[in-house]
Length: 628
Image (cartoon, rainbow, N blue to C red; front, side, top):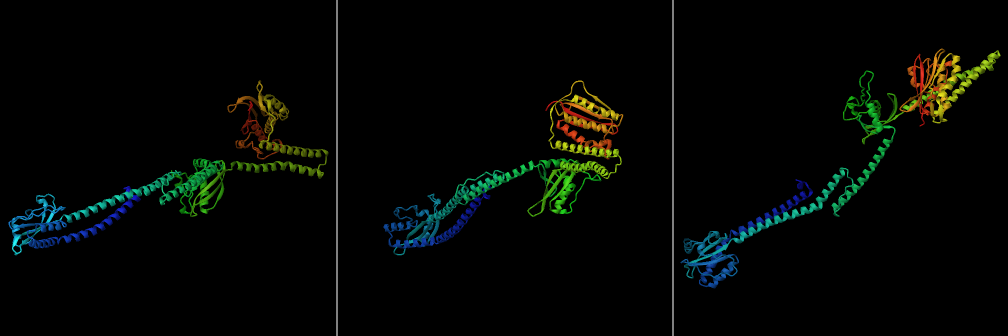
């Protein structure tokens, strides 16, 4: 029961036990006292017989003195006793009642029969105990009766003297003591119970309020407080509890703010953060990290033998990072590409960094171990950054340096060689000198074009391209480009055609000069890669591209074509499908198509290429015809 488990219940039982022990000790002494008292009562018969004999001897001197008997009964009344006198004929002497006596008036016949009286008359003393309930009185009180013979002055039996005494005083004393013991026990129990309820209101109830408040705090209600109803230890405890609750609430709020701050930082990070426990399972990740875990977990990772990879730990005490961990349905396993790095971090207990190539992406990963209070590695935190673009730009930078060096080395070498030939006066005729000077002039022009294209491309990629936007009649521009390259086509023996609609093709906002540069680069490439007798076609027509009206321009040739492997890279700087990078008729800077793409992108258009090796190439341009 709750009352027996509570503090008040235990105190109550303790006090009850103490009171019970005290009452038992008191009862033990009372019993001893009563036993001693009642052991003295065993001699009452002898005392009463002696007293009866004394009164009988005195009555011999005052046989017929009524005042003597009256005074005797008055004295005997103090001991709840009475004197009766009877003669030999059985006639009882009339003795006046004693005033204030509560003793019942009995007669000789109530105690002894005539035969018993005859025995007394013959000189025998009789003693007996009589219960009045068997007589004419129904009180149920016991009486002790002693009958002694009465002699006259001559020593001849004249009757008998009876003294009876009530035993009610002894029983009353015993009953009184028992009742007192019971009353004291009841009062002690009631007082103890009242004290227990007092303690319940002063101790248990505040403690229960403290317990209830503690339960609320464990459920997250840190603002719970208990009322302070006293200034004793319980009140101090409640005050301390409230102070603890305030400090805990402040600490929890500070931790919540710090956690929210950290969570906000993790959510706002562009890098992916993944926290892994010592079992190789993901504990925490920000949205970017969660996305990586989902994407990499969906990839089927196979080794060279076609079996799923397994990464055993050198130290078995650190657990198994193999298939068992990955197949646990209740945990999210660490992505497979991170497993070797995680094992290295756990084994060395130090930070490790590497770059991972996952499909077409490159990731820079830095992983740091997490330590427990015993300085044991309990996991690791990995920060992943997608450096695919940086790697691509770095590759472009390296390729750019290599390509520029390659493109400049040839003309510089020729300039140096021919100029040294002129200085050494190697040419012997004026025609040879003119030829050398012409080569130097052509190479210097080529270097100028290369530098100019580089500057234009740099401005375009930096977003600094300046467009003079106005309404442009694209069909007129296409006809002008056809006339511009007609002479070159005739000289090369190439058929140049233009298929344009009869209605005008209007671009609301475009830079005519930049578009002319685009068409010039594309046609120049077409002429350089198209043999004599082949065909180059210009076509333009209205169309719809990505749900918006555009003008589609196709420039196709019947030249060598571009290999399929080179198509994704032809718009990059210095990329040439001709790996030999021959000069002559097919030589170029490798920047023309990159400039084309940047100009078209600046017009919010699109350029694509379709080519079949040995059959020709078609460049398709989509330019928005409406502004915006």
